[in-house]
Length: 379
Ligand SMILES: NC(=O)C1=CN([C@@H]2O[C@H](COP(=O)(O)OP(=O)(O)OC[C@H]3O[C@@H](n4cnc5c(N)ncnc54)[C@H](O)[C@@H]3O)[C@@H](O)[C@H]2O)C=CC1
Ligand SMILES: O=P(O)(O)OC[C@H]1O[C@](O)(CO)[C@@H](O)[C@@H]1O
Picture 1 (cartoon, rainbow, N blue to C red):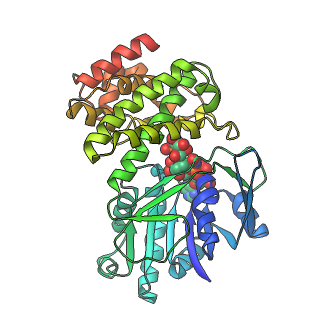
Picture 2: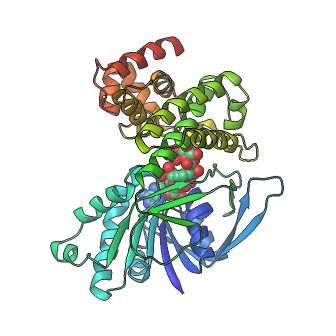
């Protein structure tokens, strides 16, 4: 049986990427440090993906197993040696931590076989596979690096499926929204995976997705949090916040339309479709999940700051994006390590210095001034 090794047996791992491999006839080895999930995968060898709809249509996912990357390093290396695909959905900040083990697997593999391995990071981050590749290369010797050509391929990708935190402790089953899109950038002829879309150039896809789905979601999460709402769909019942989301997505839309020559009408329909997905009441998706890791989300290349800087460069409006950045700066959820750290930094240094350090925005830039104005009125 063909083999896929997937790092991160969490919501996207089990509910999306791992499920597609299994449905395409692969055995999927999930690699994770969550001992309970790994044990259960090895006991059950299957789980269910349930759609967040009235009917809860359910698919059984088979041929799955698990390995713990902390205690079963040698087994992970062996699995990489035999795999056709190596994917991740583990969180962008974790990629540097798993790269050394992946590098050891690749080193052993290229000694043993010329078969091709395809590496794809499935994270909400532009160029995530490039970043993973850099970390892997740092852990390879020169002889191994020379053997990578035509043996190990690295493809960037964009993943879109809302998978909330699961409310079913002790079960491997995953509730997911019906919609999904997995876009992979390559010009190679690669083994086909059900549900994977291949494109020559990823930039328009990942920017359209990140600056619409993820920007919109972040706006709902941060304004919802400020308003004391607990879920995304509850927040969207607030007309003022819905209109804030629409105004922000008009700003990212103007940038995307100009940058990629998108059709305005089609893009406006895309926005409405996404807001419709956010309203799904069966997802019960928490504002604190969607707003998680605010320092990452305030990064210079991420969903709030990048469209603001691009809009500014293009002479377009960015005031609603600045307001969303201000709302993110007010996300003080105590169970989120980045939120706690961010609040400490704001207290110590003030907003302008934090925006410089976290978002790469100059202290006297127009965006920083606009953010501070909104921050003062929101707090
Ligand atoms: N949940 C969603 O709707 C979507 C998430 N994504 C992206 O997918 C990625 C994963 O997100 P989720 O599946 O939601 O997160 P998650 O928290 O459900 O899953 C992450 C998994 O990684 C494991 N993990 C963390 N650190 C590890 C380490 N050092 N070694 C091994 N395993 C480790 C965790 O135990 C967990 O099982 C993120 O980059 C996210 O942005 C992308 C699209 C949708
Ligand atoms: O997974 P992140 O990057 O923390 O952000 C949460 C985002 O992930 C998703 O769950 C999936 O794209 C989005 O719904 C949301 O915008």
